[in-house]
Length: 164
Length: 261
Image 1 (cartoon, rainbow over the protein chains, first blue to last red):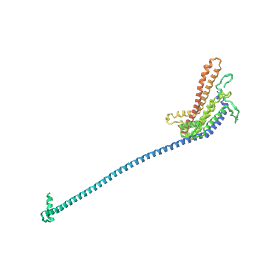
Image 2: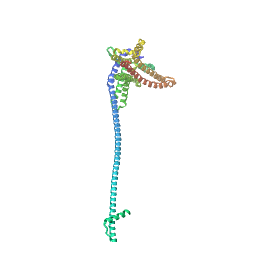
Image 3: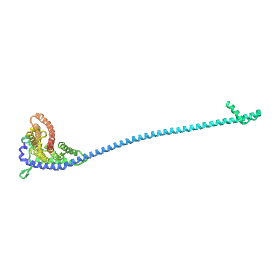
Image 4: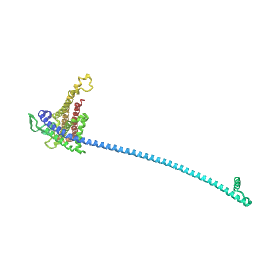
């Protein structure tokens, strides 16, 4: 086995060259190149993490916006419903009030018309009495030649009319 | 590979041969085939990492692969040590990638070029022992630096009954001290055994084809070849698993040092 048979002749050379080569590996590769590779990996991981965080933030924002938009929409819908309901109620009240007023006006007009009618009737009746009394007096004068006062005639007419 | 007279020595692949003589303060530090493969591992690892350094926001395939490996080691440390484990990512990553690349480099089919043969750096006890000492030393330094002498409380687990206080720390100390050996031997044995097995099977294939009897290739070489395909795939898996085990155990030991159980 040369590893053991040769060990005394070759250990110094192997040790010497291993120290040189491993020293170079450790200092130029382990401490020189490796940190740069790891820095690249770290930078990439950080960038990915940052991008993910930014995307998450944007998503949350969009969710918020969506939520608030929904809320706005609901509020606007309720407000519109309330407004239309109140408008409807007001319109109904207005209509009632106008109806009542119109009713009152019409009743007043009817009452006035009734009163006028009654007055006109009374007047017509009294006119008829006067005319009848005059006619009666005329008829009496023509038939009997007796002269009667209009007061007597009126009395007679009234008596007949109230009988009739 | 092939020794004299067509004999195939499965151990020849582990032989270290100097390519250029070098001496430093009385020590022989020659540039050998092992050193060459360490340099190749370093180059391959550097190339792999360089391809992943484009630093794009949307990674390409190569960058994805590099980031996958670094993320894997990072994950291993954060899951076994916690957030403090980030500090040890460079060390564990270096250990993991060096062992992984060395294991894979030893599996490369360089042998198809005559005279060239791959060498598995991690199949040598010297290398795995040094790597284990790096791992174990880090644990000791971190443990004593963070907790001082309180680090010895690692050997008295919570809830030890008082009448076992003479035994448990002894067992714990032993299991602690055996860690560098198990780390070093596990990797060394796994790589050596796998490569010996592959070479032995390859020897069956070649010697069977060279045999004089006509039935031998049919009965020996073809089944061995089919088996070898499977063993090679298994070896590739073992290469990755051994690197993973080394890195995982190192991070678990670092967890002991940082969090004291």
